[in-house]
Length: 388
View 1 (cartoon, one colour):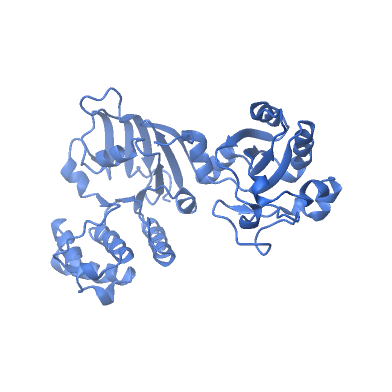
View 2 (cartoon, one colour; view 1 turned 30 degrees about the vertical axis):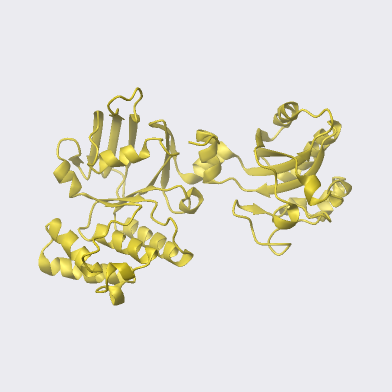
């Protein structure tokens, strides 16, 4: 990040786009800035307006109204000048297959007016940095998906743009290639390049982006650092419960009661039933033992883990919960109502009151999972669980 007083590299002010025959705006008064050397994540569901926004910023789409500036150049007034300040790496391969990888880079640099000697030097450097030097003169058809993605990023950088737009840069790539690309993105930021990143792999991107803007229905819902967003919207921790309701059980009434427990920020019902604990780390097994790293399997993809230090076997016994979780029913019986609680405090302090509440309503806890909230939880909180 650069010092204060440096003008933003990207300025978006009250941007509006309405397509012909549409009754609503695809982009509806959007405003944000991206600083030099900042990685900015623009996230949103399908149809939220982020692709239209990127299209305007990269001069492919003309805005209905508002202002957009890239590297000090007004996109609407001088699209040709703006294009010299930016580069785009699309989600899908658009390399010229009639050219070798090296020729792809040289042709792109020549298009942007880079001199012959300089573009050859830059091409050699980029091919080396992205691990493609030994394959620089092979046919594009021989490249894997990861190699093609690395080449597209190298091509985008050869004219040294002020702003780089990346659309799903690691989608479908193997872990090694994904790690290399994340590292190269960090290096671009260190060189002062501003990066605008769109991706649905939010948890992967959380450790990469400096700030996140979440867009839906063409409007900016929130803008902050990933850490601040998680703390302010998702809570301190998440407690996933699977509950077998009694004959007269009412899930809505149960959710209402759980919301009134001190320390519970939000209670919601999840649609899908929980997986059996024997297959899912971070819960209790059939014998009541906590599962997690080294206790029945690796961490789950959602960040699930075993019991925190405050919820060890001794703590459970002190809470009088040993019997409650020590004789859990079989996998089939455990399929029940899933409830997610967003907590503002230590889950160890709340499990006792929650179990008492369940017991008073003839509801049996059959599975429990503690996890840390993520950027994806923030995204769901803001945009909902409905399909688009």
